[in-house]
Length: 121
Image (tube, rainbow, N blue to C red; front, top):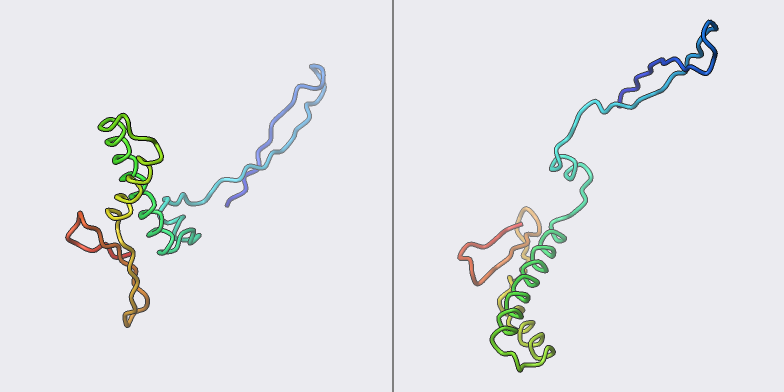
């Protein structure tokens, strides 16, 4: 951060008398960082947190899609049954989190039925 001081006059005094000068200090950042650099510096999320967010988001999306399909397909079905059926199927279709040890350390992977490649984080 760089400090910059500047002067400005105020008109508290009548015309003809000297004007009072006040100084203000403004902080200007010396370098703007991208969000990725900022996140990397702060280490906000570790790998396990990122994997959990991906898993919960995918579960939630699958659950909502299945619940909507059940809602419009079976109008007589109670909401509790729609939720249980959607939750069970979403649990089966959501990605699996696997952790294993390698020479470089722990690796976390997401295995998903819809993708042939394994997502390694």
